[in-house]
Amino acid sequence: MSAPLLVEVAGALLRARRRQTLVAALGVTFSITMFVALLSFMSGLNKLLDGLVLNRTPHVRLYHELQPAARQPIDRATWGRGQHNFIRSIKPRYELPRIRNCAAIMAAIRHDPRVLGVAPKVQTQVFYNVGTLTLNGTVSGIAVEQEAALFAFRDYVVAGRYLDLQTVPNSIVLGKGAADLMLVEVGDVVQLTTTRGERVQLKVVGLFQSGLLDIDKVQSYTSLATAQKLLGESSTYVTDLQVKLRDLTQAPAVARQYRQLYEVQAMDIQTANAEFETGTFIRTLISYAVGITLLTVAGFGIYNILNMMIYEKMDTIAILKAVGFAGRDVRRVFILLALSIGVFGGGLGLLGGLGLSLLIGRLPFNPASLPAVHTYPIDYNPLFYAIAGSFALLTTFLAGYFPARKASRIDPVVIIRGK
Image 1 (cartoon, rainbow, N blue to C red):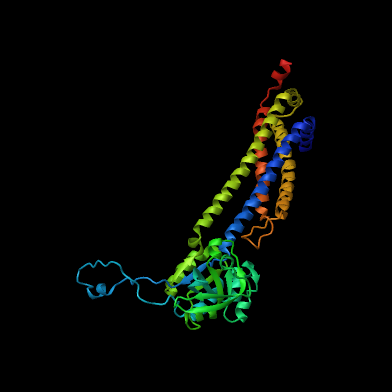
Image 2: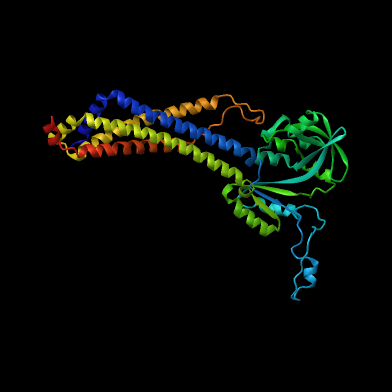
């Protein structure tokens, strides 16, 4: 039969069962809406949670770790004599945790086409002096503009101006947790004790809040020159090189190459934050599982409605086959019925999912630990809508195929004789 005629027959059957058709379409609409909204919200939440650490973590970190020598003097002295030496409690030799030839290494890394940027850092342990008490702390000396450009440093400074680190001598951006413990604000002066036992006074020009309380209680930032001054070292003293790549997935290979090339320790972001990737994968998997379950339930609803329609329309099917409709024509009619429900309900569901996502994205969300967040995170990824639309069509097709196959096998003679 011609396609227009099959479409007309399918439309007549749909109009004859308007209430059941509407219920089936609403089931698909609800499933698609929740599928899109759930994935958009969970993906946005994953990006927010991972960004708390990943935005502040270099893709490749180069550093010099103090370790015992692989070959001890006794091994060198007895080499070739066929004896084995058992040495315990080996202590590393006294050496500063600095990266040697740092300027040359930075220049070479900047010319690497895979690298977006590199920023030096000086890490040192300090004690915050609060009256007669001391609090453990960590001070990171940073190249302020490079840190802000590569690692979104400005987004986490909740009070004061981070650029004052460059212009105000002996200044510090204090962690919000440490500032609350010491009851200091922007403009106050704090006293630190360095690893050399010297007491230094620094002016607070800003407060830093990462969203991780344990970090905010100990972490503070100064300029690179101030940190080198705290340690009594020259301007060439650097303990870390933070490398940001154009492609995050290249981090393990780049780390291995830099480790061999520059004879330093190298840590890639995948190794340093493996637990975050695992958490993101599990949350995404749960979201897809729930969404697919909703669509599958809607598919069973369509299947039941079409199955009942076949039993109620036995006479109609018999008449269609008696006047010349082949079994494949009847099958096509019922598949058209199912796909019509899927297209109509899926289209409304995609619009509903977008609307619900927009609504969630406008709801106020102001956690105290996340000052840069003001609304619930939503990820408007077109892939979610493509998956939802494709799965809606697939589900409704399968839900209509099996009843359609049953309808195509009906013998009109048996039906008419029974009547």
